[in-house]
Length: 186
Ligand SMILES: NC(=O)c1ccc[n+]([C@@H]2O[C@H](COP(=O)([O-])OP(=O)(O)OC[C@H]3O[C@@H](n4cnc5c(N)ncnc54)[C@H](O)[C@@H]3O)[C@@H](O)[C@H]2O)c1
Image 1 (cartoon, protein in one colour):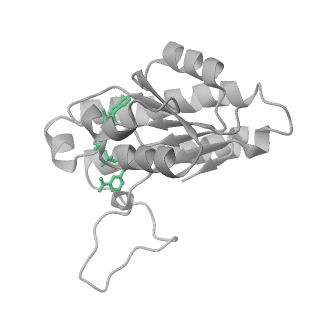
Image 2: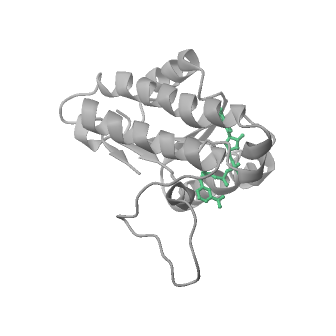
């Protein structure tokens, strides 16, 4: 395992690109940026770090298991920061299929590729690995009034195709942690 290498999925997106700029500019981390470059991905957001040898861009769909396996074998990361998603509620209402594919099937595919790689790690390295899944407050449903707040114990109550697909991915991550022991953080 390469202790200073992480994967960032969705690194050409709004939050992922800010995360990568932060990691490259403020730490010694090497980032493998895995992004399909949908309409939401924009490599211009990464211009300031594009020439840095610690930023490696891979034009890859997280549903592509063969490509993910090759990336894990080549770079042997200490963790995955999983931000890739279809992320806009309104688009999920007019076209839910891409949300099911990327958010649910893509997260499943990434979890399985990560689990296969994690199983090759030494007993010392295994607990150091992290699968960091980026969720959303939308999985808790609607707030009612300005005094209404979500807490850690709020039940899941997704109410759009977007939030239902993100809730599904959360449940998959929790299941992979509990069932297979994959060290995960939501
Ligand atoms: N933006 C918000 O306000 C917000 C709030 C809460 C949670 N989140 C979550 O944070 C994460 C990042 O959000 P964002 O606003 O940066 O999203 P975004 O839509 O700006 O970026 C998503 C990125 O994922 C990539 N992508 C999409 N499908 C892919 C696939 N199949 N394979 C590989 N890459 C793919 C896109 O090309 C894009 O670069 C998402 O998981 C989202 O659910 C976002």
